[in-house]
Every structure is written in structure tokens, then in C-alpha cells.
Image (cartoon, rainbow, N blue to C red; front, side, top):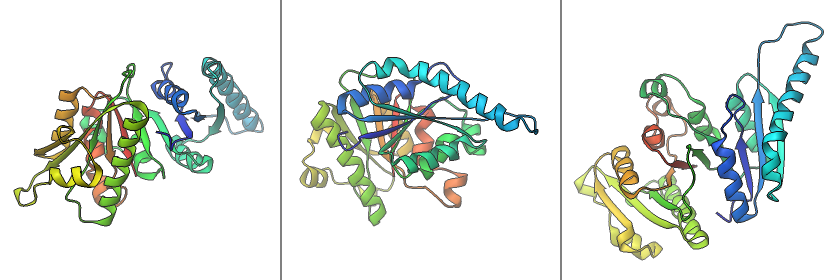
Length: 271
């Protein structure tokens, strides 16, 4: 993760626990990264001459809460910046602010939603994954493993240039964690058509990946990924985010979104 030096953390003003902030602090210590902690608030205020003063007071109050939460992190020697914004659509505010900051990675706490809610409503997680220009890590509750175990989802048979680029991004990130943090990295490739069975040897030859770390499995990607993430007890699943726009993305979502609530580990979506 040495290529990530500017981590953008979404602070949730509605909760006491902040898994994304805790994970970001642990990552920052290991790679000497900077943290930029962003919180967006909004509430109904009376339209009057005092409205702007009310908003200013609420922002100042939230800043105090944020400063108190970040004091232990700053005490660890981590460079931390903060930003409090007033906006009703906080997830769009996050996207704008992350781009303005030039973030290398956005980290946000992710909590389980029902399948119906994910399908019928555009969640903040979907918005961030589709619109952020950098990788987005959705952090689940729970302490991180001392030596991370990663499952990287790839498509060896990808023909489109955009999918090949996603493969390269996923593999590059995963190998970086392996090289710099001693992680155990596994690669999963699901396929549904026996006419195009992925070649394990092709991945070995092109990227030098160990044979026993490559898993080629028949089945729907969302099912195969979840099954092997649980079987291997991984702490992070890394996936390319292919459906970032269009009607199909809005109605169905891509594999990242389909597996998000079925995984108990963190999920990193690579653009």
C-alpha cells in the first residue's frame, strides 16, 4: 500500500464507533500516510436572519466532537487534517471533497443492509464506489488481522481493455501488500462458461503468482467470491469496480455491490 499517501476518511456523525477511522489510522502508521477526516452534517433549521449563525454553531459543535475523536490518533504521530461541511447529500459531498483533496483512497465504515434496500435504494456505498476517482475501502466492524489475508478477484479471460486494466490494478495492489506487509494473497477467478475456462498457467507466467494461491472455480462470481472469502477466512477482498455508470449499474449493480453485505471482511473497490 505504499502508493497510498493521502487517505480520506469518512467520519459518521451518527455513530460512536468509527471502524473506517480506526482502520485508516492503522494503515497510516504502517505506510506513513496522511489522514484527511471528513464529516458532513445537515439538519432542519429555521429560515431566518439567524439561520447562518445556527449552521455555523452546529459546524463548530461537530468540529469539537471530531477533534476529541482524533486526539488519540494525533498522539500516535499521525498527521491528521479535518473538514466539516454542511450539505444535505453527504455522500455527494464526500465525492467532491475527496477529489478536491486528491485522495489516494477513501475509507468508509460499511454496515449491513437488506438485499431489498440495496436494490431499491441508491446507498451511499454505491455512490462512493461509482463516483470516486480513487479506490474505496468499505470497512466492516472488527479488529484487523495482524498478518492480513487477502482475496483478489480477477478475470484472466478479460478481453476488453477496461477489464484488463482492472485486473492489473487489482493484482498490482495485492502484490504490493504482499511485498510490503507480508500478507497472504490468494487470487480467485470465477467462470460460468466452460468454453472459456481461465488459464492458471497464464497468470503464473505473466505475474509470477504461486500456483497454490490461484483458485479457478465454476459458478457465478458473487457466489464463488463469498464462498472462498469465508473458506479462507480473509480480512480483505479486493475487486475491480466495472459497472460505474449506466442503466444496468443503477438497477442491478455489479459484483462488488452484490457481495458487499454477504462478506464479513473489508472490501476494496478498485476503479
